[in-house]
Length: 130
Figure 1 (tube, one colour):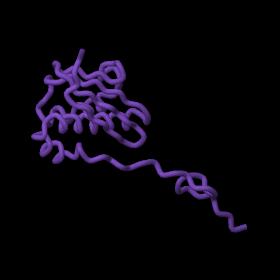
Figure 2 (tube, helix red, strand yellow; figure 1 turned 135 degrees about the vertical axis):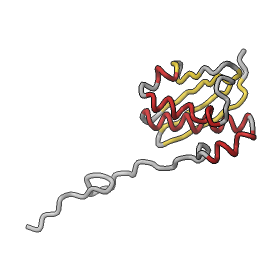
Figure 3 (cartoon, rainbow, N blue to C red; figure 1 turned 180 degrees about the vertical axis):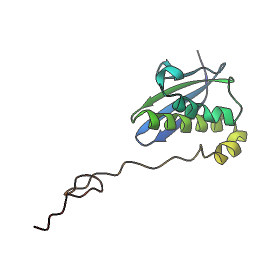
Figure 4 (cartoon, rainbow, N blue to C red; figure 1 turned 30 degrees about the vertical axis):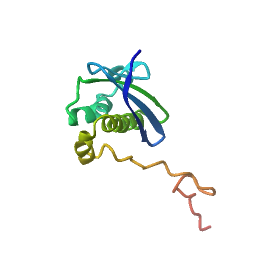
């Protein structure tokens, strides 16, 4: 049986990621796929791996991530937040470097809701004088 060293929950927009930190050699799987296969854009893969490179823990742990909701950008941000929280839970000495890079701060920006009597969140119907 595989033992989880730490658990981290990451959130971004409407995406939620659960990250399980395990002993291993650096394998990252997202929803059963390899991180490179799951995120087609290499930029999102870079975002996911940022906390590991900042704390110099690349290749030390395996990460099992389950993510749902949102789109690719939000999911990548949620994974980064979750990985950061898991690394912090496992080893408190990572806090300074993770905090300095802003990986522990939850990005609280959400989509503004559509208001009644309008076309969108802020867009109004065209005004007609006559």
